[in-house]
Length: 292
Image (cartoon, rainbow, N blue to C red):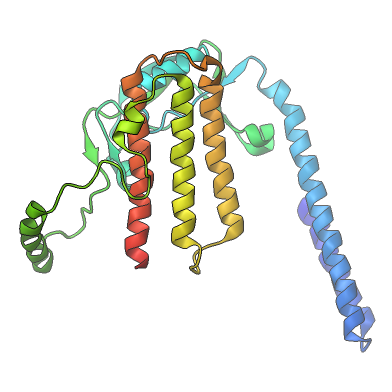
């Protein structure tokens, strides 16, 4: 329906062009501008109606279901805590997702979890079905199958052709330099948040504040790196900020009500925050190197 209406608008544009013939170009531009505005308004209206229909359908489709928290790259302890908070159970199964760690240029540790998959006991509902609250859902009390790594793996290392002679020379010559160079700080320049900052959290509010700080610092550094390059797109950056805000909102759904209560399973939450910080910081550092 949406495509049909836009096609009609395009055909109308062709009619205007044909009818104008040799008329003044400024009048033609004015008509085209008005037509474009009408098409934009029509498209927005169609999108609004589509979202409204999806939201109306959401109440029926999701009746008796809860949204399943995303377990991706979280520890088993954290996943259990998040699932238990909304009345879900979890069954952990071994899964090798080293390739995912490499793709995301991050480290995974023994016990870290993989993302939800079809057949896990949760059903995926798309935007066209439930609007903006799309994702995996399950009946309350369900048992969800989650994959986990049974070993540590550093996906941030470059595993490509490290056997070349030139590479070997660089590595051997750099060893002496590195032995004289102080170890890199546990807080990347892109994050500005140290291990001690993260380890200092005591309450669920502290956890949420730290999660928010990590995102805020990352977005700030991201904009600094790309702002004055051809790779920067303001609308795309705005969309990215919305996506990270959505991840923060998901965390708030889990922990906001617990407020200033003392953290349960603090070690796993601290480990998660450090891994999250490091993965974002590593990306910023790599982009800085690539652009310089």
